[in-house]
Image (cartoon, rainbow, N blue to C red; front, side, top):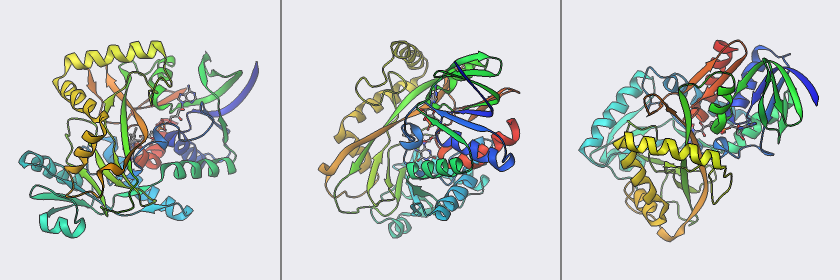
Length: 397
Ligand SMILES: Cc1cc2nc3c(=O)[nH]c(=O)nc-3n(C[C@H](O)[C@H](O)[C@H](O)COP(=O)(O)OP(=O)(O)OC[C@H]3O[C@@H](n4cnc5c(N)ncnc54)[C@H](O)[C@@H]3O)c2cc1C
């Protein structure tokens, strides 16, 4: 078996693995950094299958890591895209209410926005019409001018190219198989000895963390986000349109996104999956994972009425017409309801606390002198990636 020695080994080449390598290089330009990625191309999981929205940072509780990094991440990633000539749509977003109850949450979001230093405006129906003539709301809406949209695959491949040019070894098609010593792992037929290991394996981050004695209280439960793309030529929206979310859940609700190519996207849903990479059909099926995920899904369903009602509601969204109707709650009219087609789905690596059976809301980082583990890098980790990575490097590496 071949042996390799590096200063830092990073597992997973999603936005988090790449951003951490970028940040490490800033402080240790001579470090030998290797990233191993099990897929043969970039962006096959969350980092390439998301809405591409650079969130402004107002949803998150002011004490959270999400609040700490999102506003800054939005600014940095937007600048990065502009500097590198990547497409960015700075169209902003509106959050619309459906009833009186939503208004309470809307004002809570406004308070969070203020605490997080995010520019956010409460607008009335007349003002909303000027910003987005097609959006409808109950009395008030939120206008976030700094929300933007990028193409996530363009972003990650640009960062990867930059890293390779600076000497980072990016090994695609190489899977972490397990730990073979205190500071050694097996990757395919190679043993890699490392100074520090960084685990950013997304849907498998909890499993790898457990090999190092971490993630004891957590398990990843995958939640699928289905999307529809509009193939009609009419542009019936000019900004992103989101519903007021249920802030007890870590999901933002089905929304319209205006992609960088001008096309409109509707979604994502947030439905429980049967196994971790359960994108379609039997792809990625593993019996053990199926049993494990089913076990935790059933536990959650029994424990929480919120999860029960969410699951019931979400399963209806497998029906295209139902999902389109969800979209129609946010707008006045849509060109042609038959012009929607299913688009690639994304799966969230949502962490559940096995003791409290709660869906974890914030990012979690655990680690010691040998390894550091990025857990629950769910939305808005794409937006937050650059400052979040810097925090991991400064605090843990
Ligand atoms: C439907 C959906 C919509 C979203 N929308 C947004 C949004 O609009 N804005 C936003 O900011 N965020 C959004 N997010 C969240 C964002 O996509 C994620 O937070 C982010 O991509 C997580 O990045 P990551 O690097 O941690 O994970 P990933 O992108 O999943 O990368 C992990 C990588 O690790 C690799 N890997 C796993 N196991 C191994 C192994 N054993 N060996 C080697 N490699 C391995 C995987 O192949 C994968 O490439 C969304 C997510 C989803 C699912």
